[in-house]
Image (cartoon, rainbow, N blue to C red; front, side, top):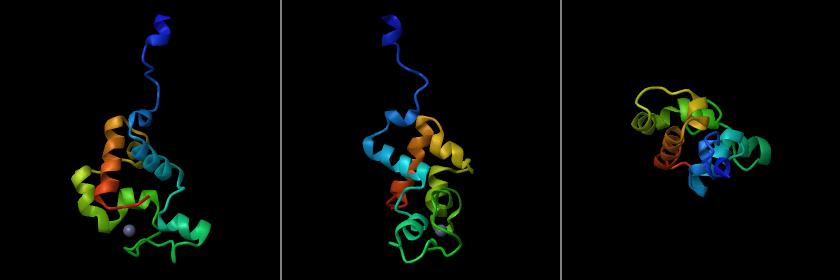
Amino acid sequence: MKALMRPRTNRDDYHTMSREQQVNLIRLRTGHNRLNAHMNRKFKLAPSPTCACGQEDQTAEHILQRCPLLDEERKEVWPSPIPLQTKLYGSRQELKKTTTFITSAGLIV
Ligand SMILES: [Zn+2]
């Protein structure tokens, strides 16, 4: 009985986030999102897969790691570069930063 009461420690931290934050993270993780690359290739709903910066396809990795249009917001949340893996699968604190970035960048994923 005691073992059942113990909090699980091996759960993905994303389970502790709000529903909206979970949805955003899942969309970023799977690539099934409303970013241009997916909307254009999969549904032809975006005119082009390219990001507004014109440098490459607008994917989760692009906006989280490289898009020059989001440099300011990115530096606010991550003053030094962080691997994509950490941003999408890290601790609750890291996941929170990712959702904060998405919100402050005004992105709808
Ligand atoms: Zn871009």
